[in-house]
Image (cartoon, rainbow, N blue to C red; front, side):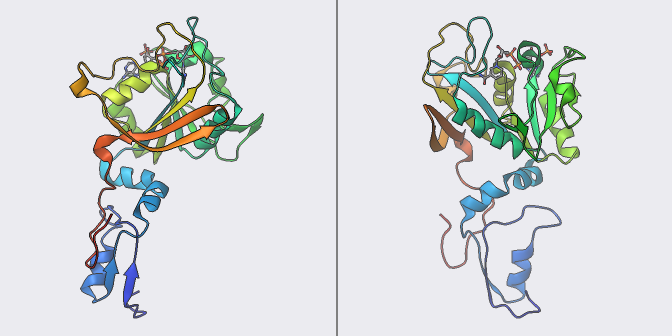
Length: 262
Ligand SMILES: NC(=O)c1ccc[n+]([C@@H]2O[C@H](COP(=O)([O-])OP(=O)(O)OC[C@H]3O[C@@H](n4cnc5c(N)ncnc54)[C@H](OP(=O)(O)O)[C@@H]3O)[C@@H](O)[C@H]2O)c1
């Protein structure tokens, strides 16, 4: 751009990468007029995996669950498949396909034997997330996850920080945590969640199989406040796309010399 004599550059986001960032500064030093922040939110959503990897040394982590209107993730006997309808389930499969990896706890593998593939009906979608199984119990040799197109990663530990660091080292930039309640809660309690997807179905299940268990909130002052970016109707269900309130500002947007960044 400098050699081509471009006089003004408008861009969305700074690259926080130690070696890949710094372009705006270089352009400014060369006398180019540089403005940041154009469509920053949209750009942030496009490259959140890269941004999280550079800033935090771990994948961008989405925790997803499906719940009844009364906040239950399963019926009294532990069955939980088909809480939501076909539109919500199709949405989950598209989001699985867009993720590098999909994680469940051993409790979900033992209860549901999920395939952890991304599908359109019975067809596998072209992009499949790597399955990640977390927990100290072993998984049956004939579990469906062993037939996944990608070799599953088994972490026989509950140390989530070590796991996400290892996933980062493997080049995984986005992790889709699909539960169950114990694992989802552990990610939240550890502060390892960038986005929450709650699929809410108009059904009542009652009982004690709540969508989240202990997330480290002892009193209302400690509540994990969220900002909802979108409420998405999906057939009869509703999807809340939210993030922890502390992360409301798109971080690392360089202020424009001419105008403030919204
Ligand atoms: N509605 C939904 O969206 C949804 C989604 C998935 C599952 N479910 C339902 O949830 C139920 C299973 O629930 P669940 O809570 O047992 O499943 P889970 O969260 O998948 O598994 C729990 C296990 O995860 C392991 N784990 C790994 N890291 C941990 C950590 N940091 N802290 C605590 N545990 C950790 C532990 O296994 P070890 O003891 O082996 O260490 C723990 O027992 C089933 O009824 C299933 O149908 C519902």
